[in-house]
Every structure is written in C-alpha cells, then in structure tokens.
Picture (cartoon, rainbow, N blue to C red):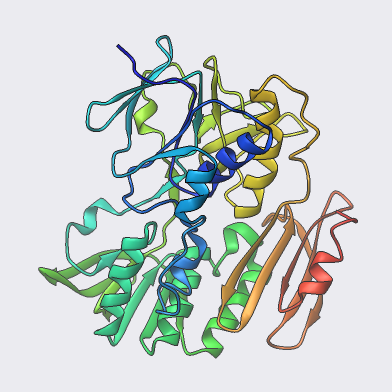
Length: 381
C-alpha cells in the first residue's frame, strides 16, 4: 500500500527548494516532500568551485531547518529516487520505500561527466557536491601542481580558486580558447588573458591522451605528447542531466526531461524544473538553461499551472548568469552564442564589455567587471 500523497519533489538543490517555497506561497496546503540522495539539507552549488574550495565558506545551505518546519515541508535525505511508476503515481526510493504522489516534480539537476579511461586513480576530482569540493580543498592543501581539464565555467572557476590557494595550475582545453563553445573565441581569448595574467598556464587547442600514476595521479599526458606533472587533476568536461532513474517510466527524455512551456512532461501529473528540464521556448524550440537565475522564473511559471491556476509569469525573460574568477565577475545577459557577431565595446586589458549581435538584433551582453553596463542592457534585450 502506498502510504503518502501530496507533491513529491525529487532533487536536493535550488530548484527543489524554490518549488516547495512557491507552492506554499501559492497557498497549497497539502503534503510536500523533498527527496534527495545527499545527506545535507539542500544547498547552493555555485560557491563550491569558489568560496568553499578556497576555504572561505563552509555553509551554503539554502534554508535553515526552521524554514522546513514552519512551511511543513518534509525532507527525506540520503536516499534518492530509484524509479517512478507513473500509472500508480508512486516513486520508489533507493531503500525500497514507496512514496505516492498527486504531483511529481523532477529537479535532479546534472551530474559531471567523467573520463572512463582515466580509471580510479586517487586525486582525480569532479566538483558537483559539497563533499567533492571539500575533497578537492584537502588535495589542494598538499598540492603544488594541478591540471584542470576543460575550460568551461566550472574548470575556469576551479583553476582560479586553486591558483589563489597557491597551486601552480595548467588549464587544458581542446577548443581554441576557454569558453569558446559558449561565448566564442574572441571573448574566450580575453578570459584566457585573465588566467594567464594570474599565473595560469593555459593550453588551448589540445586534449588529454592519458593520465598516469601508481594509486594516485602523477602525470597528465597531452595529445601532443607533452607530460605534465600533477598532484591533483580536476575534470571540468561538462555534465549531463540526471535522468537515469526515469528509464522506462513513460517520461520522455532527450537532453533532459522534455517539457512544454510550463514544465509539464509527457506523463500525467509529472513536471520538471531546473538544469534537468528541457523546456519549450517561446519560439517553439526546446532549451535547457543551466543557470541559477532561470530556476526562479521557471518555478513561478510552473507552480500556478500545477495548482490549476493561470500563470502570470513568463520564462522568456533575458537569461542572466555570472562567473566569479579572481577579482572579476564575468556576467552574461540574454542568449549570447559562439556564432554571433561580437562587438567589443570596452577593453582596458583587464575588464571588458561586449555586445552579441544575431540577425541584426542585440542577442546578449557579456561583461567582465562591468556590472552596471551589463544590467543596463536588459531592456534592450
């Protein structure tokens, strides 16, 4: 017999907490249960490659315990969801517990990609969880040399933090520049400049052939044969939506959980939000936005619809995300793409501002150390 009903939210991050919070704000009075495979209460992840890694912060909890008590939200921690039966409207947890639901919200986020050929050598790290960040911090305390593989936002932030901790860092990226796939090569080269100015050895346009070591990583071999000594290796080679537990349940998955423009999935009474959700945009195309600020607009759009009401919100507002690297905040507003025409309007050798043009229209703005000018472009976008 299925013991519980109400709304079950699977995931232990920002999307889960904001969904529960919005449900109570919209005066939903039924049971709310958040299910997470992590033992910590839901916490903020962006600081993991920054303040937490550098030892400047040891708590990124999103809400204190009294928040869940006062809002009558149940937390089931340390036991993630294993499967879903959409016909019976139930979720089976890893320990065999079965939770019934009236509505199910999928908010499981992403998991980092690993490189299977690297094996199980100690000292090879990814950063997704708080424990991952603490483990890398411990490694950094005894390391003199680090190799960061992948110069996306995670890799760049980790490289900046390790450098600030006094570790010599080599940043390896197969693309022509850091962040080339996201922001294009012109701005990527300015990001490379920022890292080189701070003492990072940036190796672009080259990959990693193998890692070597006895028990623990010792050497990283690049595709041109160069051997780099390494006490620790950080993988920042991307991530994938955490959807394996949905196999065979009737929820359509393709680069995330497929949703309509309000977060509704292919299965009745099942919704998805956050990094795992592949929402339909205003232009009819599916889009999965992996940024903190997008969660809030999605939740405010989805929750009223879940409760049978009209939503007054629209997720088609300019996306906004940022990345803190050294003493510079890199901010992105709108939807800049690597193939856009880039107009570099300011560059003093350290801080910069660029407009991204697509089909004659301002598509995005990217700035480093120019917060006022970036946010001032919001209305134009």
